[in-house]
Amino acid sequence: MANEKEIIKKDTSLGAVRIADEVVSIIAGLAATEVEGIAGMSGGIAGGIAEMLGRKNFAKGVKVEVGEKEAAVDLYIIVKYGVRIPDIALAAQENVKQAIETMTGLSVVEVNIHVQGVSFPTDEAKEEEIRVR
Amino acid sequence: MGFLNRFFLMLSMLVMMAAALAVLSVCLHILPEHYWLNEVHYAISRPETIAIAVVVLLVSLNLFFASFSRQVPKERSSGEFVIVSGASGDVRVSIAAVRDLLKKLVRDIRGVRDAHVHVMAARDAKAAHPLRVEMSLAIGQETNVSVVSEMATARVQEQLKELLGFQDVPVAVDIADISNVAPPDRKRRVV
Figure 1 (cartoon, each protein chain N blue to C red):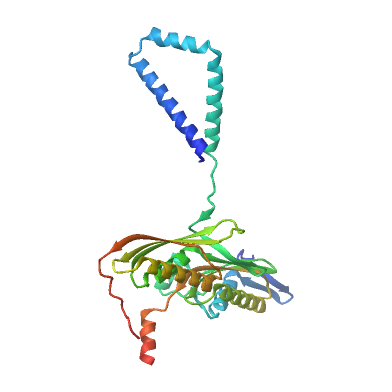
Figure 2: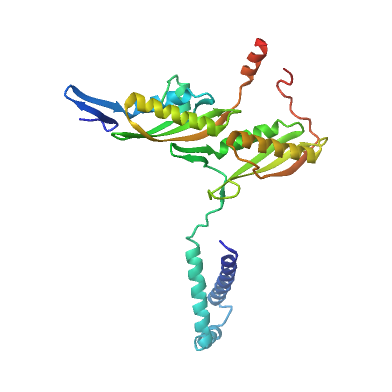
């Protein structure tokens, strides 16, 4: 019996290929964090508590809607201070779309970006730069 | 609720207050029974009473339906606003994120003791200015008000242009307080 959170991607004589929604979320999350200018994903209070308890969540800040052939993604991100949001968002959309289409074969219909915050360099990071000089 | 409806509401409340006082005076026998019965008989025999009753009914109906209608404000100060809408999807920015960023920038200006920033996003996508900023600053006594205001406005507009690509965002600056209290020590002033 198929899990309702999985889609049957391919039914061959050798068996069925099933892709869980969470897999698509993880691919999207990792592809998004690769983009220069994105400080991290915004997971809300639940995500923050889970991380404090030591649980790594690669799907944090990602919501996906997965059908048999298509997928739609919503990314909740925090950008670095000084970047131009439209440029970063475009790069993230392209990177995520390419990653999902390459790895799963699904067609990505849309990647919506939700910027939830701006991250400033921390004081520790500033002091680190000074020592290096 | 518009001005006219508020006026009607005020009149309705005055009428209700008068009616409540009348009922109280009847119940407490302040007005003799034969007196108010006479007045009621006289009123219902007059055709003007019908006209007044119809007008009151219409006004009441108007207020009744107005109480269910919701006037949507033209701007909002919470949630997200769209900066790019393309074939690949939308790019939305949280108003709170912009507000926190601008607050931090303005507080770093020399002479500014405290800042409260309000960011308003237009609901209509075709609005001339998709974003509007209002700032309320507390500045030091030694600070030149016009210099700080201009600096704050320029910094906010520059940051919004860099971050979002929005040109000439309207910025309103209000000097709420002029204080002679020493500013808090900054953690690091030199590199």
